[in-house]
Length: 154
Image 1: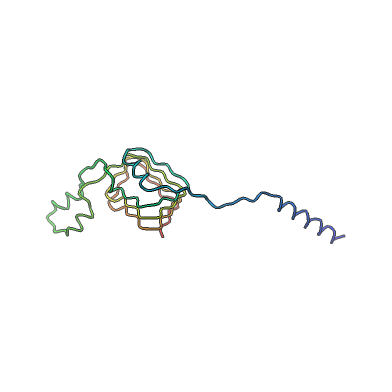
Image 2 (image 1 turned 120 degrees about the vertical axis):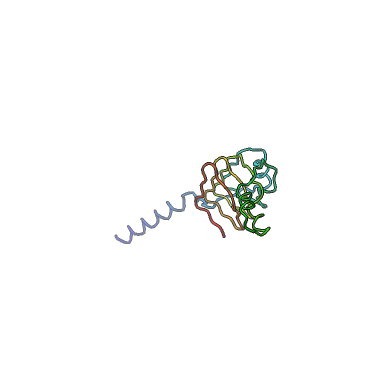
């Protein structure tokens, strides 16, 4: 009797589990060229991406944007201290103004990111983003909210 019940429940479990639909948990990423994102930012358009593989270098210093003089650079010059040319260049003569809301979720950057010497005037959010190359945020200012949630740099 016990063997019959065990056989019955085993067989029933087998049919239940094999008739269930198989769900694939792997995310499918659509490929986006970094140049497309740069084009949106240059036009002042908002960037809102989810489940993307971003191909190419995302360097905000390569696009034409409104600039303002960098007060840190000018303070360095006026301070009277000697700074190497490399130090002054790393502080940037000008700061680029980014007027786009930027939201990127569950995505992968395959190449370098360079957001150095930028001022983000609107919200900026990277949630569950993987960066497999370098990410440069040197002298970057976030004027509104900035969210970095679940970021991976490797």
